[in-house]
Length: 226
Ligand code: HEM
Image (tube, rainbow, N blue to C red; front, side):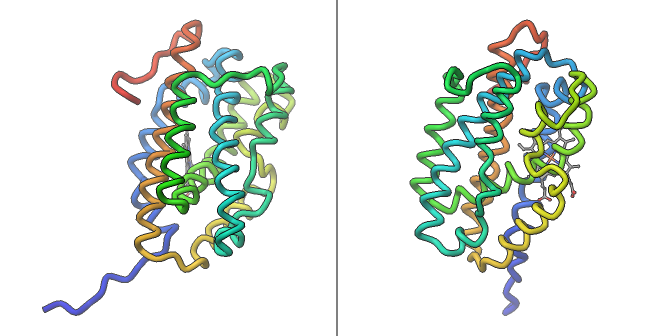
């Protein structure tokens, strides 16, 4: 009989190792490829920011409520994890009033899904925020490519990719430490992994919806749902 109990590696390790293929898929999505290579026309670029703003806003609302009832969440989620304001100012910089933005049907559906998932398992919101915070790691590099592609002086116009600016690395390390220090149970980590997988795919679904709404981009999403 094996009496060894598998040690719990910590929630961040679980999130990283169990979403690897989701990251690979997200990275390879035609939208991301067009983005980093500067082939994405400006209207589609701006549309993506507008659509992601809706996702961020809904997630923020969930997190604000959750951190009032769960001190572990309050210890992880400070104001610096809320980025919808950045998305709004990015839109203004790119010539669109945030209030004039309309969610594409696919994105409105994603917002509904997010609400349902978070209602079923509130800590799912932390798995989702993991994906968005983690994306600032690649965002630092993507922002450089985009700055060149669109002839931007920066950082305006690319802050949505890395809202932490120069502080990206310490902000990411602090997030990881706070998550690992919270003492989540394996069951809670499991819920976060499922939600993180959903969020990776959700970002790709936003990309597909933006490409479909902007045929002038000459890029189509992958065949199939995502
Ligand atoms: C062309 C697109 C992308 C590139 C080149 C890229 C690149 C990277 C790089 C270099 C890292 C840092 C790895 C490390 O320091 O250990 C990273 C981490 C991460 N990226 Fe991306 N990424 C891309 C797209 C995305 C997208 C679209 C998302 C979210 C939907 C995302 C989510 C994450 C997450 C969550 C992490 C943290 C992984 C962890 O250490 O737990 N990435 N990415």
